[in-house]
Length: 181
Ligand code: A4P
Ligand code: MG
Image (tube, rainbow, N blue to C red; front, side):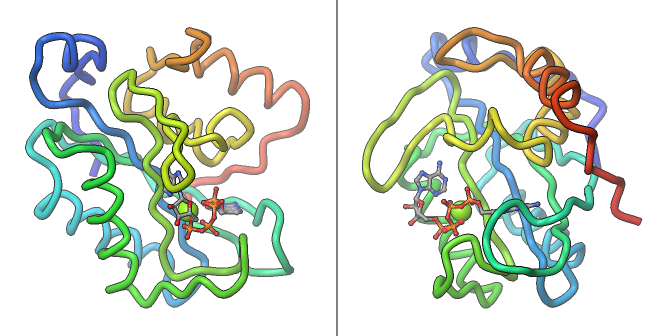
């Protein structure tokens, strides 16, 4: 499902006044996780993306935090959008709800979780929406698919390349990420 086209520059997208380049992270560990992600990626492509859509491969990773629960299927996608970050979050939550998402246990098992990881270089610190998503820097299952989509991506706050962050994470602890087969 990955696209061969080069990743557009987030800076160029916003400074030109055009659509923002948006990156999302997806996760599922209930009710056929890879199928949940494939259906969600198709819905994002047809309902939200306005172009330049690309999806990363599917990965398997052990659950980070929360109660004992099955392994996760994780991935990420990228697209251009002229919607606001808030409107994108609302559209993502509608897709999650259609996939039977329930919010009863924090970090509990879920049919589908879609996080807004990056919206160009924009920084938001509201109670209902934080961008860049605060979990990016600590999570191999987020960083690896992000870098599949664009190996040159850097943290908008610090300017540090995500590739450097991922390499440091993997030096600190062995990789637990596997292709989803
Ligand atoms: N919210 C704020 N900023 C954002 C954003 N950038 N994107 C708010 C999406 N949502 C954002 O999210 C709770 C609230 O966060 C939303 O109402 C929204 O307004 P949620 O999806 O309802 O609940 P959650 O996912 O349980 O909480 P949270 O804190 O978002 O958890 P994460 O960070 O999504 O982590 N282990 C593995 N291996 N793979 C995983 O995918 N995921 C989690 C959940 C834990 N462990 C995991 C994985
Ligand atoms: Mg979430």
